[in-house]
Structure formats: structure tokens, C-alpha cells
Length: 153
Length: 115
Image 1 (cartoon, rainbow over the protein chains, first blue to last red):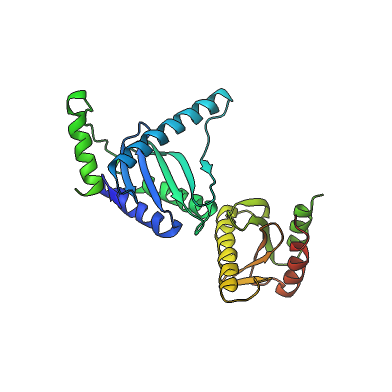
Image 2: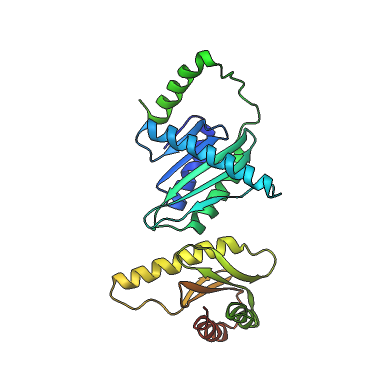
């Protein structure tokens, strides 16, 4: 498990231990990865983050069209693997969790401990916002630094 | 009245029962529930569904038949579970003073009619 911010580690580790999730990705609503577990390639992480953020944006827009405030979570049930995608609010803004799990656990267990992780993240998040401008000229440097932190190389 | 709600009514009428749920064993989600305030149905469904599902696999691995009734006893009460057809599980949350014998009979009978 790798996280860009240290305060994310404990809640995420607890979630991973309790839920039995195979892959987990925490990202901002714009698709910037905050933490990951289980991914072995940076390309997979970036692709999953971009797709997850896009799906959440699409479903939230659908909800808005239907007059709802938003969907709590989106679950894809598969034969071998399932996927939970849920947006949540933290003191650092709106984040998205993408969790891939197998038949060794259940969507109920994953939802239960995901909700607990969201509460823990809200409790331990530092209140001050890191104001780092994400300009085009330093975007690639920032991306490289994030990938090194997330994959330890 | 559906079989699900009939089952919940039968179980919750037993003295000492604080609530009952019908849960999907595989997904751990609530199908229907009648709970007193303060009982977390989502947690009870997820954890009991997982427990019953794992116990079933354990029994199968040991060459035994799956359990017909499960009691998880704690200091402040018990969780009772009776697997039914179609991957459904009837779950009851009971206090320490509950009539467990009657609850067991009602649950096994009601779980068999779930569908």
C-alpha cells in the first residue's frame, strides 16, 4: 500500500485488513491519485483513476438530471471480481474510492468498512489545505513525483 | 403480506428479540428489516452474511452439511442466524434475556419459508 499523504495510511490499512479488498484506489474528484493498494503498474493506476473519476462525474450528472443529490455508490458485480466506486467528502475536498474485491468477501462487508474508512479519514485529515498550484509547466514533474511515491521507485 | 415480512413478524414477536433482518448471504446486503432504534442493520447484515457464508464453506470443506442455525453469543446478547433458500439468511439480534429456544424454533420455521 502506498499513499501520498501519511494521514491516509492508517484508515486505508484498516480498511484493507477488514474488507479483504484486492485493489483499492483513493483519488480526488479530478482523478489525482492519493493512495493505492494492489496495483503493480503506474499505467494501470492512472487509467483506473481517470476512468473512475469520469464514471463518478457521469453518474453525478445523471443524478442531477433525475433531481437527486447524487448516488452513494456504484457497484459492478462480476463472477470473479466486483468493483465498488463511491465518492465521499473529506476536509480536503471531494474524493473517490475505487475498490476491486473477489468472492472471498462481499459487497456488504466492503461497503461497511469503506464507510468506516471515510469516517476515519474525515476525523484524521489535517484541516489546512496544501496550496500547491498545478500549473502546466510543473504538471509532469508533479506526476512523476506522485508515481514514484505511489510505487516506491 | 410477503413471506419475508411474515418471517420478520414471527421472529420479532419472540420476547427479547430486538430486531430481525433478511440478508443476502453472498452479498451481505439487507433485503428487509425490522429493527429497534440503535441497531446498525447494515453492519449486522454484512457481518452475519459473511459469517454464515464462511461457516457454510467451512462445513462443506469438512464434508458436512451446512449449518441450519447459528448462534453467536456475546456479553450483551446474541446474534442468531438461520439460512434459508435462495441464498437468504434470517438474522435476529436478541438481548441476554431472550427466549432463545422459542427464537430458534421460529427462525428455523420462518427461514424455510423465505423466498
